[in-house]
Length: 335
Image (cartoon, rainbow, N blue to C red; front, side):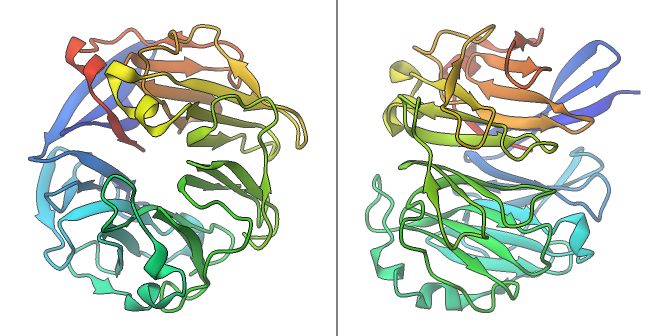
């Protein structure tokens, strides 16, 4: 029987990467009228996935993404971030962020949504700006804390990384010295309080739940950080994807991107290249763990899907029917 490995959004289409033994399959599941930019798997409802789009609202897929319906009429149509409460919470709750910046939660599988307006009362809120559209901002990432039910972090693009201890009823504002433009935030499953931020202003770590931050840049020549994965067995082993700039990260015609790894807390970054495509022409990768083997990591970009089974030392490109059109497209989300 085929095992689902990753759901991958490529512009307006959602694809499923699965395998059976040594054989890989890459199947299109769903298309939407606008770009897919956020995905989340439901830990409490088997086979349910949520899909947020850039202008067509929120979709819910059931039966592993075989059946779809549009939900969340209360939400803004630009759904930019999604998350489901982790299994450790034992709370069936879904979170959604939108553009303009608004935070919502649902406790009934997405059938109804409640807005949490206190987010916009934070002192830094008037300063939030998204450079390509400076009149607005959006929620880029939602990271529930697996160690503390009701505690989650919110990345605003651009301007703040904030947190809540009560499911979004109240919020703590950004901390001095913290990341300004977080794209992805990861929490370590075995190390409470350990945070990792891949941000437009570099790469940051915190060991105390985001009160104090340290910027790690040694060895990092391309510093526009986009995606991050952490070894679940070693909180000091990290892989990130970067580019010299936002333009080089996302536009295939101007693309230039890299992968870097560090293997100890104070170690410098080392560029990874064995088996990876040439940085020029390669859009910035989205990184993901294999759900069955956390030591295996995937990097997905416009060139294809690359796998490392030794924490980034060597990579191989999966043998898939990767459309030539994908080389011009942006990878929107991976889960």
